[in-house]
Length: 315
Image 1 (cartoon, rainbow, N blue to C red):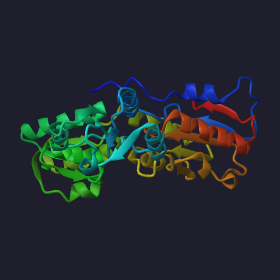
Image 2: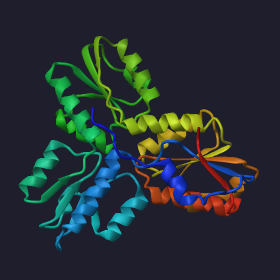
Image 3: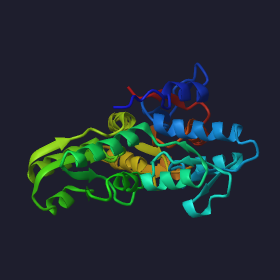
Image 4: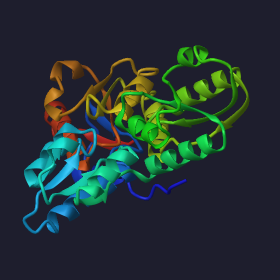
């Protein structure tokens, strides 16, 4: 498995947004212990800025949105990375492959057309792609737990000629035919709890099941962190893109213990009326959410709750 070696740091965010010696106030802001940028997303964004530095007048483009965060994509566009599709890439461009990966056919097409290609595919996604190929070559029926329309899944399917079953729910698994030998991988951002349920359902469909653990460490850490945080707050905001699978799963997990958990893309979406009477508000963020966005939400909460709001990291 690839190693997760870089992600957002709750302590760092707290230090940047919290003056020392703040007294506890009526409203306390509690940061999830693990939140924000994962290693794969940070790697792709850093790669984009390196491409800008070395562009020497050439256009830098990403093949589709580099990550699932509209605000970060807007910032990248302002700094020189244009989002495009395969048929509209300007000549002599540097092309960055999105963190979700692409099909091998798309990668080959880019190279054959003479573009300089920088592969921003998350190492965890590369691992999933390799595992899918290995399972198929070993004679297993490949079952992918995830969303067929997600770019990561489309890319994986391209590596095995679309020869796989894609299931999103236990009910989808029950609709599969009996399988002699099956091997399963998961979308890297799927909820670990959901993947376990799908695995158990698959055991009823086959006598020989090979399970590949392909969920990103950061996804699991963020899920565990928000599960603990949601039990100790009255209101909880998850900062992330509307189309971000992992951000939406964080909200889903949080609502098990905090029904008022809400997904927001920006600080402007926070309604002060929602915080009336709230003594403790939690804050988490999806894997494509940069630190500057988390900091802006903390500052907005301080404006609403008063400048001396308490700020701490969840236990």
